[in-house]
Length: 377
Image 1 (cartoon, rainbow, N blue to C red):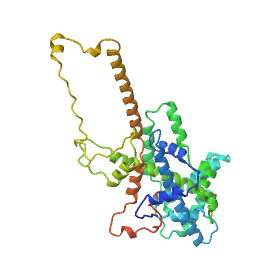
Image 2: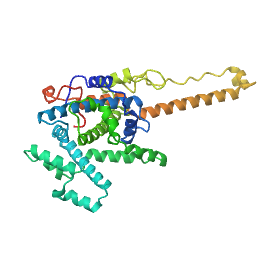
Image 3: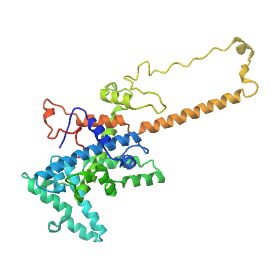
Image 4: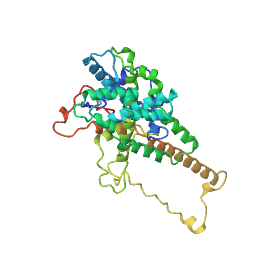
């Protein structure tokens, strides 16, 4: 399922303007850190990610409500969301695994032994509740057997594998305090704050409301959307990092340059701009001037007058140390901000993800009413 229009960020602005005061920005910053962003993700980036996720879930709920009306149901259930996700088998497979582990967790909470749980996984007569619901529905709409084959597919998910490898590399240099913070961030999810998540989506104002299982799936899709945004933004950030000797370093996206110049202030309050060439005169540092020594100093070995008396060499050395401290502090702040995902990376990732190539690309979308391509399904 996909949906595209001309401006991918227009729906974000309309969604954020009409949204309630409920915010997941602090939780999103922790989620982004656990998914590969810097230890202190930028607040403006988290706000933008929140707007995108909120926009996509609202549009997804609207389409699920339409599907629910077509089949004559009074609530939005898991079947409606599974129907919308039927075309992307990889993401549908992740959702089915998530539903199985939700059943697995609920049985563990009830105190069932692990041996019985493993028997449930392979016993078709005692299938898990959520998994049985999904299997029965997919069986009713599957005419070719492709959807049912997902239950028997045990291939490694490349995306999940890459995320785990990135998390492992991220934790190599952490101390015990940082690793504890990282583990707490990895445990965050939208499902752990169910009431806040419902208020965030404003489910009370909907005519057809989602049931409990549908809310679990929506919370999962919200987290997957955040994860995919971070995945794509890290790729954009890697592409935008200038590399020495790269002949294609000048070929930077015009959209990225526009967003980068117009929306992001410099950390020190100065305006920033993307240089088109690393060898341009603007990037070439000026030569350090060496003033010639006076004749008297050369032949007579006299010292400058400012070097003698009260606070000559001492004041100069103190001022130079203070300047170095200020420069190092500013450099650390710039480095910390440069390591984090910028809002321009998110915008460029959305632009690339929604870009379709081909003469019939404007007509390939089944849903074209909202402002960007769906990330989670």
